[in-house]
Image 1 (spheres, rainbow, N blue to C red):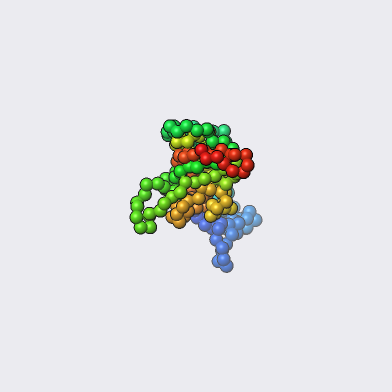
Image 2: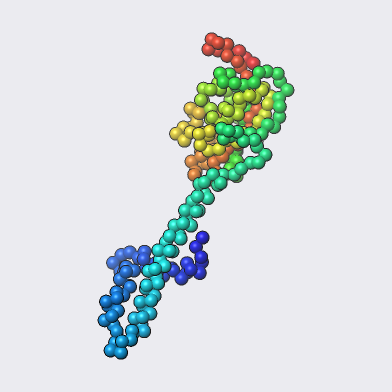
Amino acid sequence: MVNTPLLLLLLPAASLAFQTGPAAVSLSSRIPRLGNLHSKVNSDDEVNPSTRRSFVSSTASAAILPFFINSAAVANAEEGESMYAPKFVQTYEDFTPTSEGWSYKDVKKGTKSGDAANDGDRVVFDWSGYTIGYFGRPFEAKGGPQGGAFDKDLDYFRTVLGSKTMITGLECALKGMHPGDIRQVIVPYGPLSYPPEDKDHDRVGPKPTTFSGMRALNFVLENPRVDRTLLFNVKLIRVDKSDGKGGFIRG
């Protein structure tokens, strides 16, 4: 961090160095050369006081200016690192981290019988999503106001695990769940989250079902200056096993 008193002292030198235009005078032109200084020595071999002050002031400014510029650059670099480095992203101690990079917390174990979900199974689940790293805004929510523009019948989401039609973090989280299980999943921005080239989320879901939800999600995903971590609440409704003929046996 740049020392404030030192910064105030250096401002004249800094402003001089960055002047532009016809009226600009470079810092080097303000520094008397030794030859010129010698010509100003009077007959008594004494330097004129005004010349002495000009020389000392200009030389000090020239010597300190690189330090000011380098210090400012270091401060800006440190600020950038704090903004974009992993430490900028929040951590959630009550969630269990995985080796893949996503985290989870099991909220409820289901009472329904059935096999755990695995690759090749068709899973049917309910979900909600929040921009947990940015004010916790919902981009897919349940239990909102009913009636009018808010009245919308939301269908369950369906996907085949391993088909890459759902973000990797959520697909990994669904594996091993049983029908009726409820799990909270934290997905960091990057390979585990929504791909940046699929802005409409048609290729890789789950896709928000409302325009406002899409806008809330994309605002965060497209903004590198905020924490783009997402939170999903998922409830596994059903697991349909493959019948070996391209179809599925309803669970």
